[in-house]
Image (cartoon, rainbow, N blue to C red; front, top):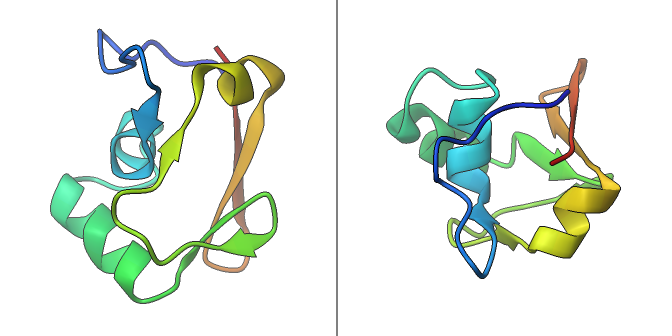
Length: 78
């Protein structure tokens, strides 16, 4: 899924929280934070519990698979 980040991508990448909100996997940053803290988010099949997790620009060019819960997947590319 390609999405427009409206300037969210900085020189050093994008936060996982912002990616979840921009892809509409979460309705708000608060919901995204709770989901990450509860272990409901996986990136490339690895659970993420770090609220400061960032994607690099190079990783986004290759595409990243984000999993919310058990059945909801999104692939992010820029």
